[in-house]
Length: 140
Image (cartoon, rainbow, N blue to C red; front, side):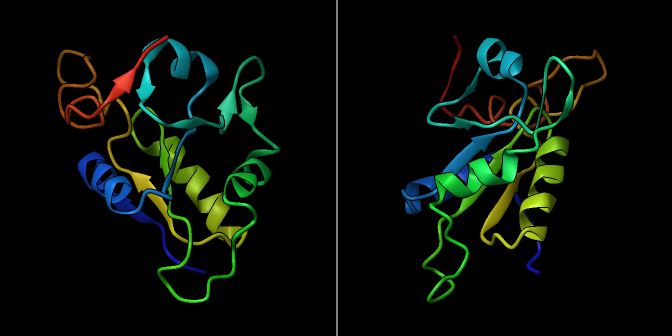
């Protein structure tokens, strides 16, 4: 089993530029993805979602469909990197563990997520995260 690689939002963006086959999966709830905003080009597959707030039983299958089931690689650079992002990096880490346990490789957790942790004023996007880094994002 390989380890989960945690990288910053800027490192994730750089990886996406260097390897265009990279897939960015936003694992937040549908409401967060739509109304808070999301990284431009992210694919939404919720790890936990409303109305029941239970782990998505189809999450691994849905991610596998994105990478066309690619688990076996001819060499270490032949896979499809999968970046996982959530609000602050906690749910995406849980989702990454599930994917690694199921045999997927090239899994990355975006540290700080989309909004980062709360600051001393209970605001997000002020310390770390995708938006804090000034990376492209959109909102519905």
